[in-house]
Length: 84
Image (tube, rainbow, N blue to C red; front, side, top):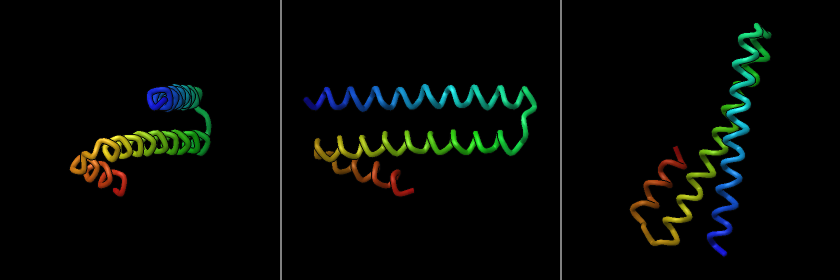
């Protein structure tokens, strides 16, 4: 059951990363099409927010794994990253 949950989370993260890739492609197209600077910056902000969400998900998952495996040194390192 745990592996199924991990696979589902992995699938969701991969889906988010592919969406981000599409957003970046869109930003490149907007730039080459000489769209308004403000519009491009709004898209860049959205991409950054999406990347931040993925990063938090990855770090939270890693913290949970370390906690379950009782790897306290690793958990402390992950928590420091999360709190940065």
